[in-house]
Length: 123
Image 1: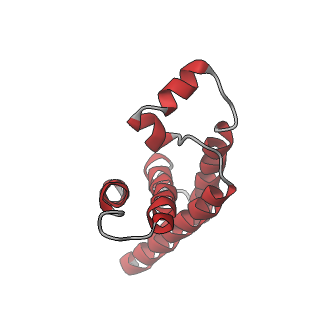
Image 2: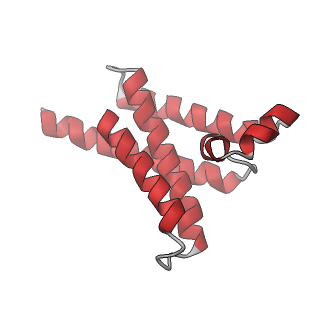
């Protein structure tokens, strides 16, 4: 799962860095990155909460994603300063958007489905 998490992070960074240059539409780059972020959160949950049911991990990932998105509505000078940095923008984002929640849900569903396929392949 660590390898999947790292591969998802790499894919998200590559999409954000080179997506527009490859001629991909802005929406694909923006929401594709958010989708991959949601998938990464799911993989992190599989690493942290080992041996939990996949449905439990998906719910936990959705709660984390919701909290991060809602945190964008909270502003303090130090938090806004952190959000202006590259790590802050990648981890927390800058602006609240309900569309991000849709993209995160799709990414979490992608991670969950992949996890179930991997589990079926093992048994």
